[in-house]
Image (tube, rainbow, N blue to C red):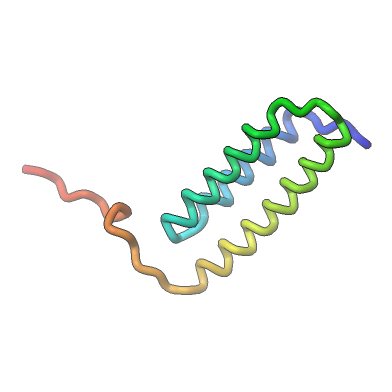
Length: 91
C-alpha cells in the first residue's frame, strides 16, 4: 500500500467539488457538494494507511461517476428553479 500525500487528497477533494458544481440542476448540485464534504469530514480522523488508500480509490471512482452523471444531465433540458434566477434590481 502506498501512502497518499496530502496534496493528492486536496486535489481529489477540489476535483470532486468542481465536478459537483457542473450539475445543471440546482438540487443535484447541492446534494453532490454536500455528500463530498460529508464524506471527507466523516473520514477525517482515519489514520490507517490501508483504509486511507481504500478511501482514496473510492473517491477517484466517485469522481468518475459524478463526471459521467453531469455529462448525462447536461444532455437533457431542464428548467431553472426560482431560486436560481437572478433577483431583479430594486429601484
